[in-house]
Length: 100
Image (cartoon, rainbow, N blue to C red; front, side, top):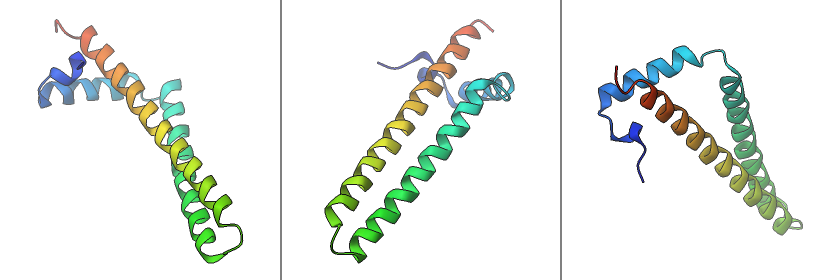
């Protein structure tokens, strides 16, 4: 099921994003999104390092690859969760400004 925000055209979506940037620029949700971005980048970086170490060191391959897979899954879930929360916020703003 599509949200109201997704049914809008590109110009209205751009206006909603602009409103979002103004309203939530220094809010707690913005700080949390920044922190999530750091966690996502760190998880991906560490999973790549673990994969490289697993390839180079033959003795602990299964452990390195399993930890890398777990980190990739965590990074993906963080990214999807962040996207869903942001989409819900944009939809909330779009519904609030629907009559304007």
